[in-house]
Image: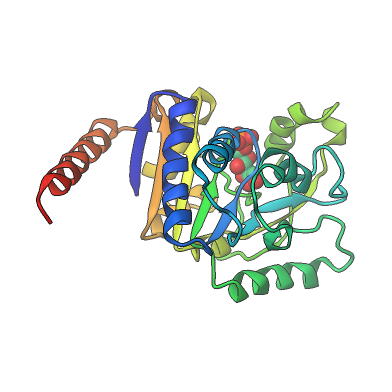
Length: 266
Ligand code: F6R
């Protein structure tokens, strides 16, 4: 895992946007895996900015979102489809047909989940998957105890997640208890994963993700099995990492190497 520490949420968002924009410029028809929640909001703002000011072109980009609440129509203010429309899709030049979010109102969930997996395969697989992490260490809605080989499926939200997400609803009662989510196995098939985390309330989950044992109790820890993972954290979220100094040294050494290489005549 490559661990990049940045001062705050703004710089974390900018750094994540650099990776994503570089991919979109290099491969205009790339496949992105996207997340919702408060963590990627700054990243989406930065992408919108680059689209408007620097002509970052999303016209051929294909996206797949990680998850969706069961029972909420796409028009519901707290549905993840609505979140994506508001915070990204409606503000860039993406083709709406290229954007995929699981349908929380599907009648046959099993068939819908299988179809979602197939659509990812048919698009050629996910090139870069953006991830946040829950306070309990979940990625997507893969709550503690989820199989590390799991695929897209129906999942019951853990009580901690229901409490965390209640801030977006009028009351805890209104938070849906079920979601459709990509599985850990689905996520691990992405070519690259980029996990972002900010704030003291994520410090324990980040430590367990990066330095803890690989365990289904912290589904983000399964990322340790992936060969290309970038973790971008702010100072607060990095505060419990035991090898923090080392991660900084690695980044500094790589930065020096890149600077040396780019100053050499080609
Ligand atoms: C959202 C998702 C979740 C969130 C996680 C962190 O699509 O898959 O796993 O990334 O719950 O949420 P925030 O960013 O709101 O702290």
